[in-house]
Length: 191
Image (cartoon, rainbow, N blue to C red; front, side):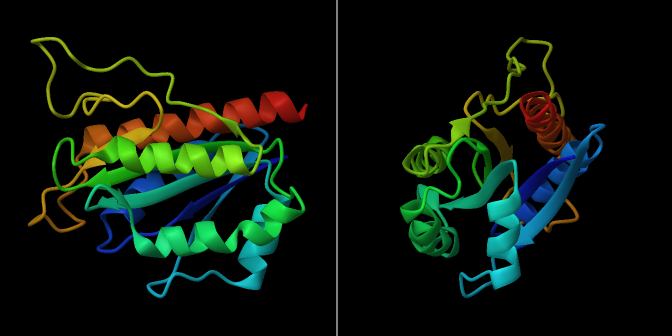
């Protein structure tokens, strides 16, 4: 069984909803299991969470994009990951990432690029979305990959929208399909 961990921070609940969709997709793949690991408001996870990450075949990173980068809580965990880095504990694990911000762009790519760099520091193997964008005149806001992420799954939640209102169904479906892609790759490479 390929083990996928979705390691995420969510400040207001929107990124948590996106993480749940990623995990739902990953967990639906035959031969894979998915678990959510939430980074607390003070930027910590438990020792059991660190052990789960060490035992994972894939780690999918998730964080909101605040002021053009990942939340400080996510960065605190990234810095704390220097302990597994030193022993190359995450080497050759699959890595992927997703983010959410209030604006359509919001410099989300900066957050994804940070996650890619983190994964490369750990000698991991990065997986992108593998999805074409919805970029025709006929496209609607609820189409898959409307925000147009290739390196990672992107979502947009208006700043005055509750987690019940956003991310929109198309962004959540993008997240679910992204989880499936990562899990399928993890199952294929594990076998």
